[in-house]
Image 1 (tube, rainbow, N blue to C red):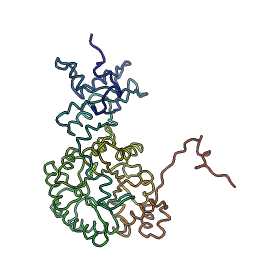
Image 2 (cartoon, one colour):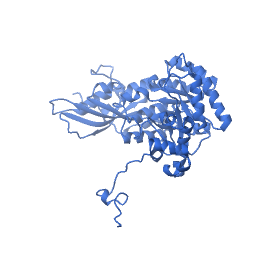
Image 3 (cartoon, one colour):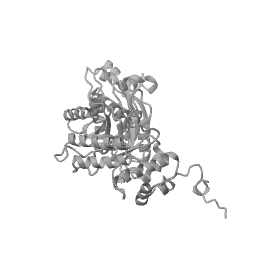
Length: 449
């Protein structure tokens, strides 16, 4: 009689496998069968594991024991999640995918297809929560060329967060106007600047001319002040054209490239691996956010770090747009800095609607290792672009030194003007360990009168 649950797939735990031989994906799955009280959920998990590896709904003769043992995914964990939804089963599952399935060519398109492909077709709802990459996989990818330490070395900027000027408006400026904006924020101390992700090749602003003028502006800032900047040039295009742009930009002296996720991690992989493209890479999350209902932000960050992104915009609780939970945003930051075999760390970039009054709450969560991108919160400063960049540097210098922003602003007109315009934010605090706030010494009235 045919076994209901195939031992070649089910008789496994984490302790059963050689961890260096498997990519392991963790999912939340939810299945609803209206009117059915009996839901054979492990049978559904087996279906998902087969569809994501070797087989389909009908077993053929070549789908033998050897194939299943060597190439089928393994069910390493099933953890039921209680739910009040009628006729529904929910669970966290872990599927191990043997890396022998890519023994000749391990590439991102096939890897994505495996862990985030067919599984979404066969369940009522699924979300990819995490993916584990063994050392053997990490060794076959470049990771960030520079990472955190490399970018700090290029800028000679240590032991503090970095601030990035987002060039605005998104499009419509000439190369000269773009360069002038960069020059002004560079004088104020902006560490990096970047094109907006929406900027493509325009007749009014061809990328070669824009790069030439911005490089001249950066050089002028360095001559006048000694301050270094990195410019992230937007090159998003079809893959062959992107590689052509990246190589030419590097030859012209570019030190950074901006690529949007819509171009695909595989394109980043190619450019990060190209010896002619000795540049830092900023990956913009672009349409990635449309997939967050089914894939967690930390999974995207792991993939983008693996293929060679030095920095990538990240969600944070105090942004104008918060696409994920506060906990997922915090975990995303941690995943970018955590050791990952040979792969260097990737800069978090808490983004969207940032302004200097956020410096304290951002530093409390992220510490030194963050790049804060700012467009309107820098360029909208009432005293101008240079003052906007100065206000950011003053705010970050204050929090690193442990000086409250209000106090630091007393003798810094740029910071004071920014705080008066946008205010200072503080992080809400949770009362743990006591019945309520009335009994907690950090929250309750001292009652000394």
